[in-house]
Image (spheres, rainbow, N blue to C red):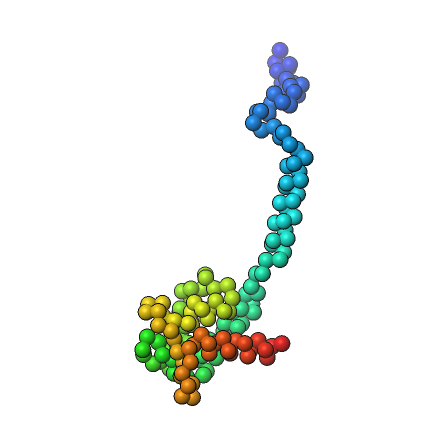
Length: 149
């Protein structure tokens, strides 16, 4: 009798072993659906515009060095700062917002555009001309990209 009980599952029809809610009623549909889903997912991953982080980091470091070496005066919340202080402040702010930065433009937007406390825009005074820091850095970014190409 014990021997017969061991072989019972082997001769039991599959429909009795699998619960009715688990039976695949549309096997062809599931095959087509999973294949289509896989293809669409692969295409989305392949063509997603991921930023090239090595280039982004290089550009951000270039902009930070550009700020530091500029010798310009930076106005932040109505107080003037030299270029080294401005560069250090923007480095600290970048470290704080780094998780939101996906491009060099985001770096300019989140770390070098305006005060997160007062909302006042940062400005830079170079050779007697005052300009918004965001515009000044965007111009330099454009120049550096043009020089690379």
